Image (cartoon, rainbow, N blue to C red; front, side, top):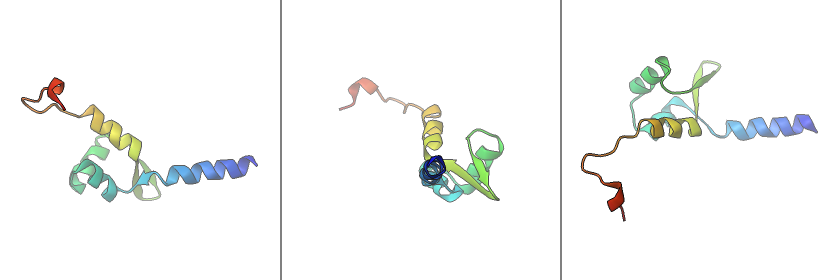
Length: 79
């Protein structure tokens, strides 16, 4: 029973993995920029064989850490 649960857990986790191309789309950056972020370890990633993979949760965490407030934007004035 535990092997089935573990297998199900791993399958569920794999569904949330993104390729480098998909991650570029989420962050709206080029492949060159994404490779630079991974090389400098600014964004969490891992390899499956030769492929670089990202979890959607970690991409959103990266966005949250690097969010900048727009000039003249007042959060209290949001509607």
